[in-house]
Amino acid sequence: MKRPEKESFVSHVRENLKNSSIVIAVNRSSGITVEEITKLRKDMHEAESNFKILKNTLARIAIKDSSLDDLSKFLEGPTALAYSNNPVEMSKALFEFAKSNEKLTVLGGIMDGKVISKETIANLASLPSVDELRAKIIGLLTAAAAKIVRAIKEPSSRVARVIAAKS
Image 1 (cartoon, rainbow, N blue to C red):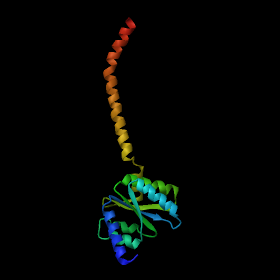
Image 2: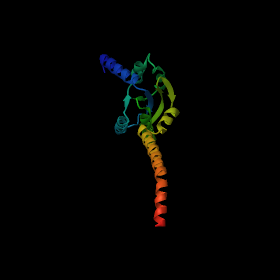
Image 3: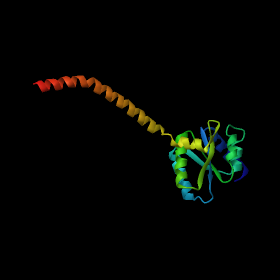
Image 4: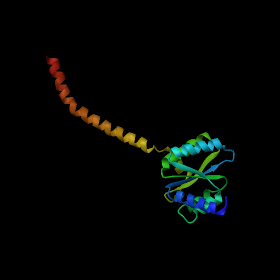
């Protein structure tokens, strides 16, 4: 890649990283295959996230003088960056892939300008998704409504049963 192309690439990466609420650095072993990376990228895309493999020097230039500057401590060895505005889904996708493939390990990241550890990212991955939370709320609301209907209906049905028994 020639210098003007690198500058354009770095500025594009910088903008994407700045516009993301979470950026996670992962260590990728040199034994990871193209098919495995393709599967990870597909999983990340489904989680509304991005996965970018780039040289550490270009990554350091992209994050220099920004709120992501602390991310440079994770940029050792063969690394890649995952970024998104949906921290839970992205964390789940990364940890699901890492469970089945030891060649990828989560190092740490930055969320909303603060450094987060691998354990914090694992906690994010264990949280329920937005859709799961919505389903639980709807279930609670419908259960409460059903209880109210039963409470209102019960006295009249008792009277009806008594009348039916007497006749």
